[in-house]
Length: 363
Image 1 (spheres, rainbow, N blue to C red):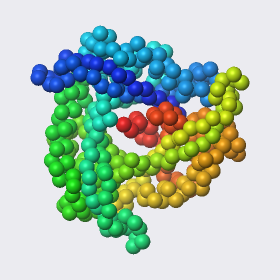
Image 2 (tube, one colour):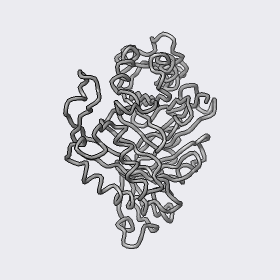
Image 3 (cartoon, rainbow, N blue to C red):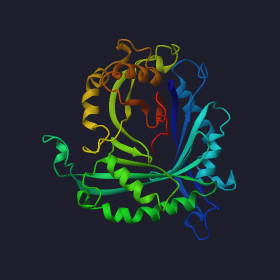
Image 4 (cartoon, rainbow, N blue to C red):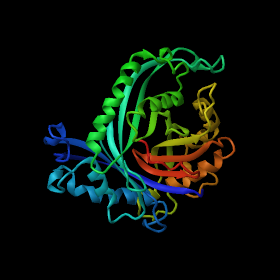
């Protein structure tokens, strides 16, 4: 697979609505409001932005221009049925943006929909549980061998039929409830089948128990912490690990009168995605600690540094920086197949280079 570069942007929207397509008696049929989060992912053509490196900002501006007229409004004044799905389809049809690959709309931090590359709708729901665990098969000096705990989160993704979103979301809630009762405020090692409760094995365990009742399930995402976790889709395991960078930048291609030509800075989120077969003894595809240790030399070149002085980087836009990071870690982290570099909340790039690595951004 050749490299795929997508620009991603996010914008919030405060609006009221009624959802007439919700089942009779459902609370969403009443007038209510949300702070929506809208996200676009686009593979932009060359020269679309004003200058090389301005793509993320230009895409963010286009999203703002699209959503501005409906901000702080009643969405029913703009469309007959402002369901999450219909809002996402409206967003995907944004005429001023070429190359849109996916569109997503989150109506709360724990619920939303996204449209994939085929414009099929996927509903997701996030659930949290407070649990203890230990990993019995790690090396003797590994900290995860000790009993400890996490505020876990699980995100369930399911593919829906057109117009099914509200009913599917409620069905996901029902299917998850017994697992939540078993996991929350419990020691996961005490649950049959979770004697070695890594993120990967938790994801597989949830998949196997939900799929019979929820055949439209497409993916399980387990957040072990806010900065690392695992995906499982019934076939393959993937993990990710986040790093926070506080760096100074200066865009060399920016016109002199553009503020991005000045030295400025961002708190970046750099997310490394990786794929490997599951080690059935250890219970993981890759140890999160190994990812962190191997990435540390590159991290130290980036964090609290002026990136415009970095040797070998083409420019300081997110795409150039992501490509530089890929070159740096190619030998030390061969499992990594995607890099997300976000210069602000939800805004940046996704660079992927293996089949299956370019799935939509995590909610």
